[in-house]
Length: 207
Image (cartoon, rainbow, N blue to C red; front, side, top):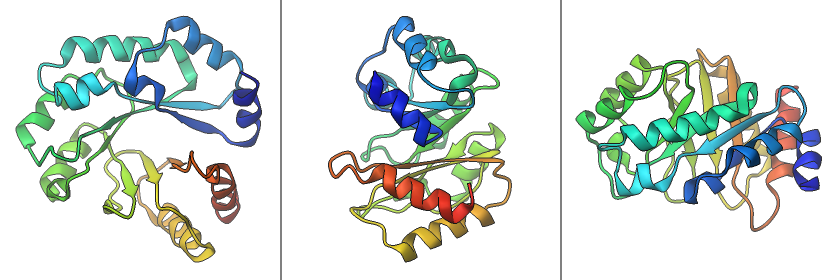
């Protein structure tokens, strides 16, 4: 509890992985919101039931339940992240059908973990629905930096980022056209270096 309040004084957003495994209670989300200052944003990772079990098919009811629960955060709700499994290849019909189910005015990002998705057809579908292409960077796969929504969503997961690497990512953020807000998450839970890397990037952006 105290850790969240401390974190929120240092950085302006957090990505919640808890929701990938199970749905929290509304009371838990309300408690999180109360511990954070105005302007703080929570990004929630969509349940694996939607992304890995249903694989976006016939997902209307669980999607509605997840979106309704996420709304408990009110103005502190950031984007919802839909991270697809690495074995799911490009399927325009599947993606378009799911995008059509999304409630209006909901900010969403999609992380594709197979390179077959990195094509103009995908970007066009995301743009049509104002959904962000999650720019994920790891040793295994690097997503192209393509703006498909009014906001950017970056997940930086390499083992380490040098000063030159951070300079390059700061340039990507500054130069991306159409992004009014950018969410950047360093996924370094084991080493604990994420917050320090985030602050170093913020310094480069003058934020």
